[in-house]
Length: 84
Image (tube, rainbow, N blue to C red; front, side, top):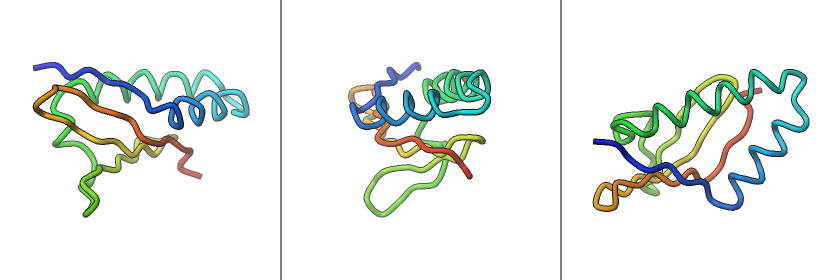
């Protein structure tokens, strides 16, 4: 079953800032699009679970922190940054 992926205002700002400052904007855009497609399917199996309940996924060039709400079938991206 598919999940809906939403971005927190903070993550949305971070992604826009990363894209604006990127040497290769297409690479950032492509990675963000692929990442969103991954998060739509079985997000609770992706990345590493943290004690806070959030998950962290390294998907070069991005690192994403997200929360999965199985009851709502929703993934909330909490933060997004570059791997290096």
